View 1 (cartoon, rainbow, N blue to C red):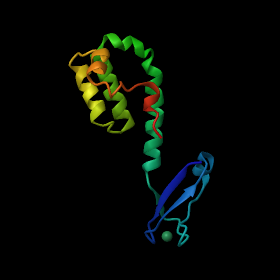
View 2 (cartoon, helix red, strand yellow):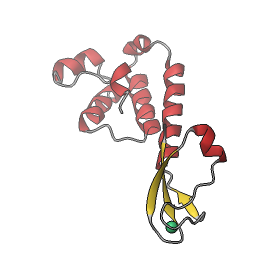
View 3 (cartoon, rainbow, N blue to C red):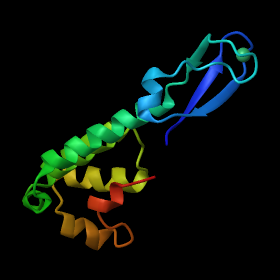
Length: 128
Ligand SMILES: [Zn+2]
Protein backbone atom coordinates (compact mmCIF):
# COMPACT_ATOMS: atom_id res chain seq x y z
CA UNK A 1 0.00 0.00 0.00
CA UNK A 2 1.44 3.37 -0.92
CA UNK A 3 2.55 5.58 1.90
CA UNK A 4 1.66 9.19 1.19
CA UNK A 5 3.46 12.02 2.87
CA UNK A 6 1.56 15.12 3.88
CA UNK A 7 2.49 18.42 5.39
CA UNK A 8 -0.02 20.35 7.45
CA UNK A 9 -0.47 23.95 6.37
CA UNK A 10 -1.82 24.95 9.74
CA UNK A 11 0.61 23.46 12.21
CA UNK A 12 3.46 22.74 9.78
CA UNK A 13 3.92 19.15 10.88
CA UNK A 14 4.57 16.28 8.52
CA UNK A 15 2.81 12.97 8.67
CA UNK A 16 2.21 10.00 6.48
CA UNK A 17 -0.89 8.04 5.62
CA UNK A 18 -1.19 4.61 4.14
CA UNK A 19 -3.89 4.71 1.50
CA UNK A 20 -4.90 2.36 -1.24
CA UNK A 21 -5.25 4.03 -4.60
CA UNK A 22 -9.00 3.73 -4.24
CA UNK A 23 -8.98 5.32 -0.82
CA UNK A 24 -6.63 7.99 -2.01
CA UNK A 25 -9.18 9.29 -4.48
CA UNK A 26 -11.95 9.52 -1.89
CA UNK A 27 -10.23 10.07 1.40
CA UNK A 28 -10.28 13.41 3.14
CA UNK A 29 -6.94 13.53 4.83
CA UNK A 30 -6.69 15.41 8.06
CA UNK A 31 -3.62 16.45 9.91
CA UNK A 32 -2.58 13.74 12.34
CA UNK A 33 -1.78 16.40 14.94
CA UNK A 34 -4.33 19.21 14.73
CA UNK A 35 -7.01 17.54 12.58
CA UNK A 36 -6.87 20.34 10.03
CA UNK A 37 -7.93 19.39 6.52
CA UNK A 38 -5.60 22.07 5.21
CA UNK A 39 -2.88 19.63 4.25
CA UNK A 40 -0.67 19.34 1.23
CA UNK A 41 0.52 16.05 -0.14
CA UNK A 42 4.21 16.03 -0.82
CA UNK A 43 4.73 15.07 -4.44
CA UNK A 44 7.58 12.60 -4.24
CA UNK A 45 5.42 9.55 -4.50
CA UNK A 46 3.52 10.72 -7.56
CA UNK A 47 6.61 11.67 -9.48
CA UNK A 48 8.13 8.32 -8.71
CA UNK A 49 5.03 6.40 -9.74
CA UNK A 50 4.87 8.26 -13.03
CA UNK A 51 8.48 7.52 -13.82
CA UNK A 52 7.83 3.85 -13.16
CA UNK A 53 4.95 3.90 -15.61
CA UNK A 54 6.93 5.60 -18.33
CA UNK A 55 9.76 3.18 -17.73
CA UNK A 56 7.38 0.30 -18.37
CA UNK A 57 6.23 1.97 -21.56
CA UNK A 58 9.74 2.53 -22.81
CA UNK A 59 10.67 -1.05 -21.97
CA UNK A 60 7.75 -2.21 -24.04
CA UNK A 61 8.72 0.05 -26.92
CA UNK A 62 12.28 -1.12 -26.89
CA UNK A 63 11.60 -4.39 -28.58
CA UNK A 64 14.59 -6.58 -29.25
CA UNK A 65 17.64 -5.19 -27.50
CA UNK A 66 19.95 -7.50 -29.38
CA UNK A 67 19.19 -5.67 -32.60
CA UNK A 68 20.92 -2.62 -31.17
CA UNK A 69 24.26 -4.37 -30.88
CA UNK A 70 25.02 -3.31 -34.43
CA UNK A 71 24.28 0.33 -33.71
CA UNK A 72 26.18 1.59 -30.66
CA UNK A 73 24.97 5.15 -31.15
CA UNK A 74 21.34 4.08 -31.13
CA UNK A 75 22.06 2.08 -28.00
CA UNK A 76 23.67 5.08 -26.34
CA UNK A 77 20.69 7.21 -27.22
CA UNK A 78 18.35 4.63 -25.75
CA UNK A 79 20.36 4.40 -22.53
CA UNK A 80 20.33 8.17 -22.18
CA UNK A 81 16.59 8.23 -22.77
CA UNK A 82 16.02 5.53 -20.19
CA UNK A 83 18.21 7.30 -17.69
CA UNK A 84 16.30 10.54 -18.26
CA UNK A 85 12.93 8.90 -17.86
CA UNK A 86 14.01 7.28 -14.65
CA UNK A 87 15.15 10.66 -13.35
CA UNK A 88 18.27 9.08 -11.99
CA UNK A 89 21.94 9.65 -12.38
CA UNK A 90 23.21 6.16 -13.05
CA UNK A 91 26.75 7.09 -12.15
CA UNK A 92 30.10 7.59 -13.83
CA UNK A 93 30.37 4.01 -15.08
CA UNK A 94 27.09 4.29 -16.92
CA UNK A 95 28.10 7.61 -18.44
CA UNK A 96 31.45 6.16 -19.47
CA UNK A 97 29.75 3.32 -21.30
CA UNK A 98 27.29 5.65 -23.01
CA UNK A 99 30.08 8.01 -24.03
CA UNK A 100 31.98 5.14 -25.60
CA UNK A 101 28.89 3.93 -27.41
CA UNK A 102 28.37 7.42 -28.78
CA UNK A 103 31.91 7.42 -30.06
CA UNK A 104 30.99 4.30 -32.00
CA UNK A 105 32.62 1.64 -29.85
CA UNK A 106 30.85 -1.68 -29.87
CA UNK A 107 29.54 -3.12 -26.59
CA UNK A 108 32.04 -5.96 -26.97
CA UNK A 109 34.96 -3.54 -27.18
CA UNK A 110 33.71 -1.60 -24.19
CA UNK A 111 33.33 -4.75 -22.14
CA UNK A 112 36.90 -5.74 -22.99
CA UNK A 113 38.27 -2.37 -22.01
CA UNK A 114 36.09 -1.97 -18.95
CA UNK A 115 35.84 -5.54 -17.68
CA UNK A 116 34.42 -4.54 -14.32
CA UNK A 117 31.43 -2.76 -15.71
CA UNK A 118 29.31 -4.97 -17.84
CA UNK A 119 26.72 -3.16 -19.85
CA UNK A 120 23.55 -2.00 -18.18
CA UNK A 121 20.48 -3.65 -19.51
CA UNK A 122 17.34 -5.55 -18.76
CA UNK A 123 16.87 -6.42 -15.13
CA UNK A 124 19.77 -4.26 -14.03
CA UNK A 125 17.45 -1.30 -14.38
CA UNK A 126 14.86 -2.60 -11.98
CA UNK A 127 15.92 -0.69 -8.91
CA UNK A 128 13.94 -0.46 -5.71
ZN1 LIG B 1 -1.76 20.24 11.67
